[in-house]
Length: 487
Image 1 (spheres, rainbow, N blue to C red):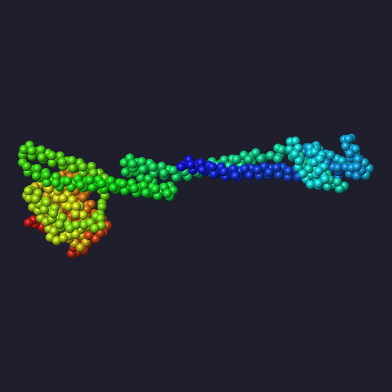
Image 2 (cartoon, helix red, strand yellow):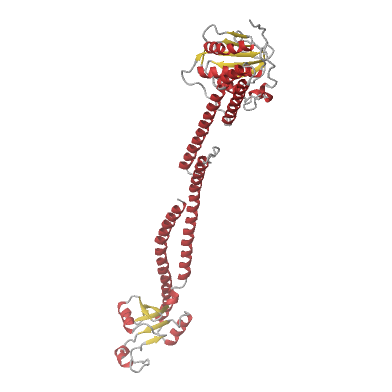
């Protein structure tokens, strides 16, 4: 594209320069010729007053010498009176003759024009130019006092006609070349301005194709290329988001495997001793390590929060009852006390059923995984006018650093957690405009509060520590410090 623009500009500028330079060169040549003949006319006009006064040779020679053109000027005065009648006889003698009642013909200077041309000018009475060897002559008629017509001949050499013409043409050619070079340089810069953004767009596409998801294109250049760059960057952002969503989905699905793995691990622990039991426990441990590896690999991408689609929602009370029925069987095997509250009536929330079940499984799985056997836990659902709070609390050792636990990928340190469970819960709450907080429960351990917004406000980020505060009294109150007892 760049070379094509340069060639087009070169062709157009060359045609324009030729179209103007050639006629201008011809005009300059004509101007030089007119200047030379104008000077010759001025020299002839300087002699005319003297011819109208006298025809004496000596006086005329002095006038011609004073004009400074004695080498290139000639004066031809015809004979008058009786001398004119005998002029044909006097031509053979080669000298001027004076006859009674007239004057002889007088010729001053070197004659270059032909006699026929001089006679024609004398007869017609108007100036004329004629070609002679080495240049041209100007034949200027002058009327004498005797009524005869004298002819002043001024020689104009070719060097004078072309004087300064070569310099003018050289300057004209230089200006034309400068215009062509300048136009080519401007076209090249314009081509670079157009080609460089296109090259960056191509390079960005190659980098994105090679897997460099951070490749972006500067939005510069002509309007069309800027729009193309904007579209490319938007496409790249969309690709990154789609890949991140896929990895999040893979991580979430992998994390959901932790629930049945927890059951398998607990059941394997109750198998007793023996080779088969040890092999079963080893296989479960190996499976847990593989699932953890999948989760860590899949969660490398930045998480993307996705709100529930139109019409999505479920009955939180029903989901809590269903999941607690599942986990209660395991809790009974381990001697854990369980309490469920607030699920005696429907509680609609704008969250998909599967997502809420995954969040509950993640929190309850953490209770079984990170607290000793016999540790009690509880799930409470509080329904308000514009929000629903789900509280999952336990009587375990608690979380020493809630901020670190909520940070994706940092987990809980020595516990070996992937940290994805709390992130699933956080994204679920933030998709509705709510949030997640971690605090101390009245059972002595950890309490995780899931705030699910019902009025569809934009997602907000709140702190993860401290008690729950409501702006309006009479709504949902803090349960972190409220006394409770297990049945």
